[in-house]
Length: 339
Image 1 (cartoon, rainbow, N blue to C red):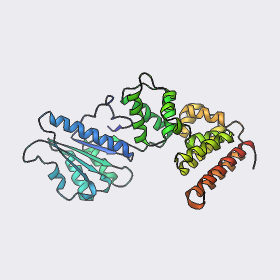
Image 2: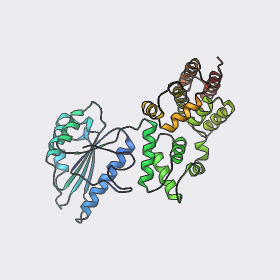
Image 3: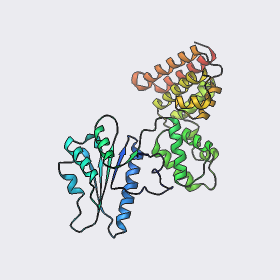
Image 4: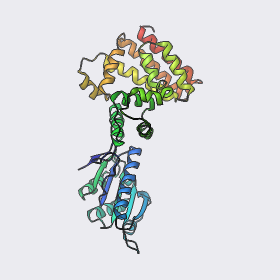
């Protein structure tokens, strides 16, 4: 049965490594989770081997570089005895004969070896996933965390992983401050847990990331869709001054306007709507408040404004800052009913 890796290895206690299996298949494109799962599996395997006075040899190879018969050589015991750990990355790129060797090996793995295989998922090389699973390989899924709710789950899992207590305000504040980069989110959780005693709340996150948390693209977008022009422009200029990417700012503006359009006129219950749009319930409640004063025609014009700004910040315009300021002004005007 496949397990899913978010904040920590599936089934593991906070801070512990997953138990090594003879063959493990990691499926997914979330690079941070894939890399960390590999590190934990390798550490656990070598620790188990070290109990027998041998830390085990480590071989880390790309599937596309493997030659026929090389897998058998890598997983064979060394002349001095002891086990080994073999990591084969990018199995979707393996040649047909190499894929066949991997599947055959998984059915009868070497007794003193641990094999870890990564596969990006998708249609390419999909048969190998099926073959390895049928052969008894342990499967760990590391899919892309594209929804805000999934990244919020990741942050909660990270706090549990390091044994820290954090409330929902801290989770929201950290996502607002850091954004979607899982490495940065995990690092931020580690830092907060190391430097904070007691329960972590939004105010603690704000102290650490005040400038960053208050000047992200999402902050600019929130002010804009709420019609607060001066605050939106102030946050925009500060965000650009500290190096926030214009593309990311415009993406946040687009997301803010789209959510107004999808949530504002919906009579669905909060939980059902949150599941449909891929946002946490607190975000749905906030967007419903922000949507007051908006008309469908205004939403359509605002979407056109951010679409034009998107082209400008991606190279068609001379000044991304000017394009974003113009978009913010047009969004505020659209909310007010202006052209």
